[in-house]
Length: 247
Image (cartoon, rainbow, N blue to C red; front, side, top):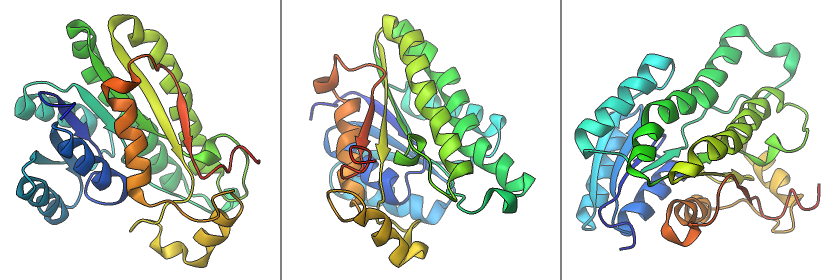
């Protein structure tokens, strides 16, 4: 129960990596505030955590604009009293040729993947800094670190997240707030189910040779959010089965 007394806000927490992270943080004693778009799945996730003896609440949000992010931060503090841990996991995954990208797709990707975490941090990190304690974990991707056809839009949003992680570590670290990120490789989730064999082919290029389970990424997030990572600031931890080591 190393996170007992802590309040954690996890975005995109109704499925996949976010759901696994919420479950794990709750199991370690945190009061978890799960955010997502699907209220039914949110209620199910909260019920499962509570049934296991954990503490959880659901806060619906689509994070499609600045107002949504700021409103989520406000409601999180109202419900939890504070936010000690912020996991910026919510994201959209636009794949495809650059020439086929629409302005709407571009704007949506940057709104959810970059703008939302930016303004959540802007809203919540100052209070963490004032208390002298806090942890922020951002979810990037392995394709933020190398080029891959069809990944220009998605990879660029997550490359921005990786840079923000380092800039925020420099800004808030001296005040006791640790900011880090994970960079997952292929993960078998509800969101990647439509990729079919392409997911396995992508994973086959890494030494591990398989997609990750969401809990494997969640374990890395929970480590960075917890006290055992107390001397880690501004790191982007590759959780990609070794793909970036061989790229």
